[in-house]
Image: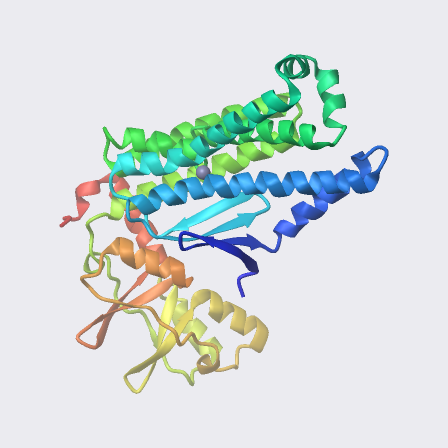
Length: 378
Ligand code: ZN
């Protein structure tokens, strides 16, 4: 169960809303209840309408990305609304930097268009003189917004679309601005280097935002800065790994098979063998036939729960990822991560010839960062 409800479909893209989104609607109703002044029902209705319309703008932002992506033949799986915003899941990013640039730019551009459109509407409905007084006089604006009518709703939506456009253009991952910067850099630099540089700029920005927010006592904004810093750090690590492993094959990193455990061994006997082996997981073999895998963590957990006399056979993992020596290392790493497996086996002509774990890959990346030509690429 995915905990999200499908609302409708646009050009084959299902628009979903995650169940936790209801929290935001509930929160908006609560804020409205206490802010409604004369009528709390009106306050709640106003805030809920505002939040729903604002998230409709977020859907339009994601649709902006998605429809341009479809133009370049990128398949869009779905768009899901979360309390923190919308996420469009795409099968892959296009190869060419200018395509990534246009797909990314389409999101904030949608909010700019919405700002202009809604702003023009406000200009007509509220009147230019009144609008000018409102945006230049804070107390008047406050009073105007607290009326909680159609005009104040329109003004709030206009302002929030402008904020969405600006916020998304901050040049840091995972914001659109970070991707725009990367695609511009990628026109001059190799892709992984462009990502590393863009991520570094993002971390710098996040540090600036975070520090300024802390000095101003704005804890929420400081947390946003921290979140952006971590996201940029992760993106940079991923780019470093991709740069290091690109063009390498599984056969260049395969590790010798460690101890082979029999399913009838006790966990304590297995632990004794594990003690002298560097592998993070062990093959469980019965009569020459592979029956599963037992990771070091699972062995420790099983001993805690079931005691040292329990058998290996009742705690093993039967779903083992099989890799081939000619598989690309990057693809192997992706498969391991997607399965949540820490180690896979390498099979050649029906025989297990070795293993490959995420730990092995991390060690290899460390080595290749010091000397990228340590292994031949092809
Ligand atoms: Zn976006």
